[in-house]
Length: 311
Image (tube, rainbow, N blue to C red; front, top):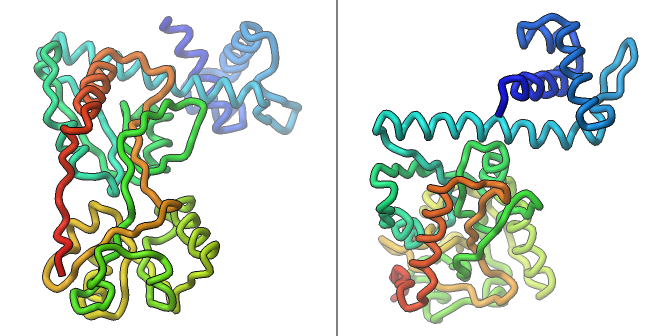
């Protein structure tokens, strides 16, 4: 990327965020006429206005919004490329920043971390635990190389490879009558007190649970919300409620008087995807993704961690 190209993109991004020529120029530490020239140069290059402006107002056009979105990514890629090159020259670790959903099956993470790439002996994986919506934002912003996400929102700027599909689990006291069953259905949970994750953590997933329950004419007598399985544990172990949780949470909760059973509802399955940017051409990230996919391609190698289901 040419230095002038970088300055031009920075000018458009600053004006898009400030919507004021004076403030944008001060932020960039350039004169206002220079900022105006930079904007005009970009508009001449693309053949149309990025901003709609008069003497009092500056408004980003549709073309401007599209330009800013990709300009931010381009600047992120440029900085990451420089960091990677410096790491190689200095014989330092080559970092990859990978997001992971807290709902992800631990097996997938352990498999990822077990991969060694001969061409990149100093590869260092930095894992960041985030909810799917936050990971998508960071992927598009360029601060993550790729992510392992549960039911991520779709975007034309992302590519998604399905890695796994698993049921929800119901956590209950070992003394609960539901523990006499090898699995649980929504009908068996009717008029009980449910514990669910807070909707803000994954709105579409939360809504799908209530939607399927409504379709089956099943309702809870009360719904309590938590952000972590630890918050649900005391209510479950005392038999005051049952918790709808993921497999990773089930591994944490199935202890000291609590047991879990799979929820048999075909309309409620957790799908985990490997997601990355469509335009990401990082060689090291691509090699790691391919190695990861190869390890998971053989179904016989997918040894899921057994859950303590016995009552």
